[in-house]
Amino acid sequence: MPSTDVLFRPFRIGSMELSNRIVMAPMTRSFAPAGIPGPSHAAYYQLRAEGGVGLILSEGTVIDRPASRNDPNVPFFHGELALAGWKGVIDAVHAGGGSMGPQLWHTGALRSFLTEWVPASPVESPSGLEAPGVKRGVTMSDGDIADTISAVARAASDAKRLGFDTIELHGAHGYLFDQFFWAATNRRTDRYGGATVGERSRFAAEVVAAVRTSVGPDFPIILRLSQWKVQDFTARLAETPKQMSDWLLPLVEAGVDVLHCSQRRFWEPEFPDIDGERGLNFAGWAKKLTGAATISVGSVGLTGDFMGAFGGESLTAEGLDGLLERMERDEFDLIAVGRALISDPDWAQKVRMGDLAGLKGFDAAVLAEQV
Image (tube, rainbow, N blue to C red):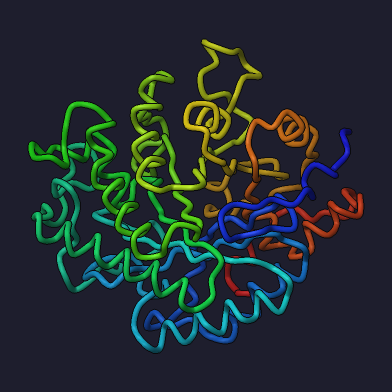
């Protein structure tokens, strides 16, 4: 097996300096009644920082916008009480030796598959569609769009003020930003629609530009993206490198520093017809096409993908050879680890010490508690 040293090289982008290349992926945990994070959140994230994770990305946190969440127990990133809770979280993570950013979220018209709860306000999306041909909620007006952009920028500014090291915008998996990207859910004929994914990137680019203005030139902005959607695992926004470039370059030009490229399985090539079955993955192509730093993610160190986890499936730990080989080639800059860090807070430290035999698999039972 290649050396694990490649995972423990420092990494700097803008004002953020990381001790290693391991990122804790954002994972919805639904342990914030009334939207307020508390001491259990601080302890949960601090434990992973003490376990050696370089950068922690929080669970999805929602902006100050009606119907911005699809679960009553996901946390707010607005309001005095919620922000005070998040101040406790970032202070705890820093005390544990880690860096952290909140993931800022708006779920759009997408329902949660974990709860039947629905918000009191009508859900909103680009065209009032939850999925192709499936109507839900209302079409966003120009005023709705402007207010949403402002709400994201305020949340980003609050994150910097509280002492967070970065922020991540959730633009993946069929939520609001992604509903603008996807032709099947964006049927608009105004400047936020269009026949190409480049045209449909305008909303996200305007959000990024507003965030950049609110946080200044050096505070890192991460944007999470995916081809696949919760509504359709086979969906693709970009069938060719040219289409991917048209999609991603406007976002980087608007101010994104890091593209967090979500795949269900990180080892799968994005365009195998071009570079083969061992070709570049999504994060590799995104880095090649835009020059931006990238994070790869998707079933790292486990035998199955995340949907099995939510179905109650427990998974065993798996080797890291393929990951290390790709990182040695500088295919991408950082690697995000999700479920393995829920079951094993010391995952990063064990990898650093070469204790791969001591890595734990994923036990679905841990989803019921925040530890």
